[in-house]
Amino acid sequence: MAFALRALRSHLKDATPLEPSGGFHLSVLFPKCSDDVELCRRAAEQGFAVEPLSSFYQYSAQLRGLVLGLGAMSERIIDTAIRRLSESITADTA
Image 1 (tube, rainbow, N blue to C red):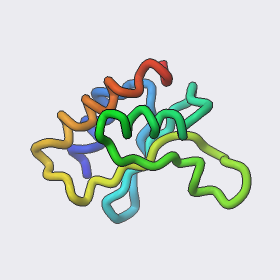
Image 2 (cartoon, rainbow, N blue to C red; image 1 turned 120 degrees about the vertical axis):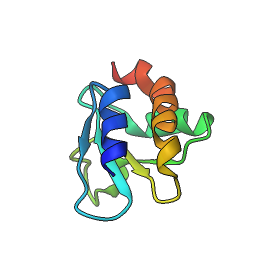
Image 3 (cartoon, helix red, strand yellow; image 1 turned 180 degrees about the horizontal axis):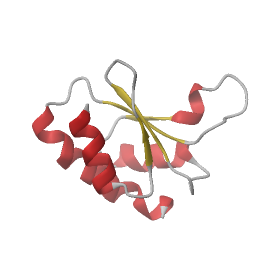
């Protein structure tokens, strides 16, 4: 997981990764993002399967960002994958 956190900090400088307490999912906050569902749509167009953080709230969304599932991804491709994800969504988060 440390490798994924380093890649996120390197490629998504304005985002804040929330360090997980367990599991293989990582949440990333985007302070300037108002529509994380749109970010997910754009990421999906590039072949990424991510979830909007706002969809995990029962009522109104408290935070906006992405939930990344890294369990099936080998460590050697995480940096490249996160860089590609960054390229697909940075226009909306900058």
